Image (cartoon, rainbow, N blue to C red; front, side, top):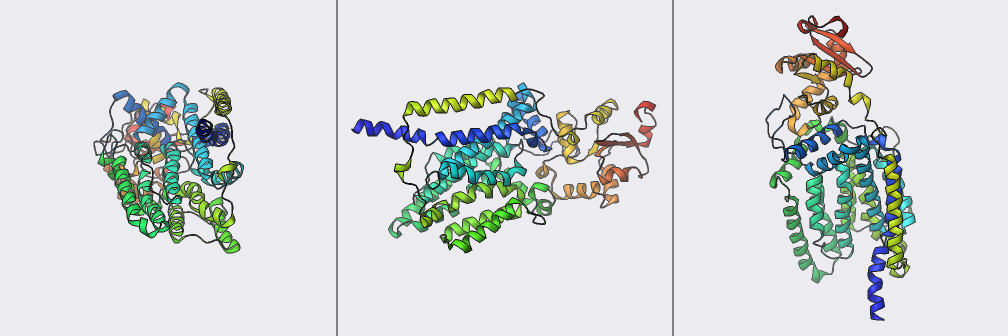
Amino acid sequence: MSISMTSSVPARGVARWLMPLCIGTIVYVFFLGMGDIMLRDPDTPWQIAVGQWILEHRALPYNDIYSFTRAGEAWISSSWLSQILFALAYEPSNWSGAVILTSLAIGATAAIFVYLLEPYLAPARAFLLLIPLLAMALGHFLARPHMLALPVMLAFVGGLLAAADRRAAPAWLLLPLMALWANLHGGFVMGLVLIGPIGLDAIAAADRKDRFALAARWALFGLAALAASCCTPYGWETLLGATKILSLGKLLTVIPEWMPADFSSFNLFGAALLGLIALGYCSGLVLPWTRILLLLGLTWAALSHVRNIEVFALLTPLVVAKPIAEQLGLTRAAAQEARYSLAMTAMAALAIVAAGWSITRSYATPDRYAFLRNLTPAAAVDLLEQRHARRIFSTAPIGGYLITRNIKTFIDGRAELYGEQFVLDYYDAIEGKNVETLVRLLETYRIDATLLNTTTPAAQIMDHLSGWKRIYTDDVAVVHVRDDVAAQLPSGAR
């Protein structure tokens, strides 16, 4: 009897992953089918380029090597591991590799989400809950490093919340997740911040006699997690670099992903907030004050910056799951777990993986996906290369593409490198708010050509600036050069 009981434990543990694995595969295949939506962010090309540089030179960047406005200044890549993974995925299959890698991250996130909710919600119901949550976060599902960190974030914070639900200290096995997160993306700082309030929730719920010991264990874990976050090639600089963007001040209200949430029209995030309020009023549900603080913190983060909406979408259900399940009597008993043999579970898992692999192979072709065209003005850049232009004033999105063409940029997506005032001046210039600022930037940095999207106000202003002449236009970009340069151009290039 003892042998039978012992052997059934790992079988049930593995079986718990069967439905999450199935759901994760479904989500993976779904996003694989709509992968073009992941290729619309201007930062993707330069992220891959950095990964390729790291692989080629077998070193990490410590100084800027991509711009002529900040050349040689201190800059580290806090997402170096993600950039390497994207570069490795990109090489054999072009953009298909980046889409597959991003879709895998989304599928893994879905599987972890369903697994973490399993004690309180059946997998089928968790899947139904997951669908609108993924839709809510869809705008930030891009082929960028934060996506590779998303499943790690969910596993780490989910582990913290699971420990709080048990009124226990976190497992030390979460520390490698923190180290991995710190090497994948700078968002690991949020994980460090959440240790405090989640630990407070665990301590407040514990018996009075156990609180001091539990507080000491959470504090020790917090210090260990801080040390784990520095287990990167950059050491302490990783932590400092990850927090640098938060010091950009007014600039955070200008960069799209750092803007506050917009409720001028209906969206799923607004609907979710209204739904939470309605649920509280209609059902009379009561949350512990510590969980209310967590919920308010996640809400404030999402309201402050739209890039945090996916964090709100994925973590809010985990924060409220146990209190709501207990009050509504939804906690699932251990006896309800599906009892599969280890062999059956392994066979089912292999079948799911095989099906996913077969579908992946059909999508892994170099011409299956295409990057957003207005961010890759190839013809205009070809012309500028023919003219040997060296100091090109372009928009930040186009700057990411210039990096892939080995052309030094005026600006790109690394706002923390360029600093608040420089980027604000750039926005004033390209948006036509201050013509004097545009002229000053052109002269200060000795610009010999401009490369702007056709809809950019600065492109129209350049037509009227003395000493400049438009030499190329298509449906994507406009090129201006100085008059003395334009005079030397062959007639076919004008």
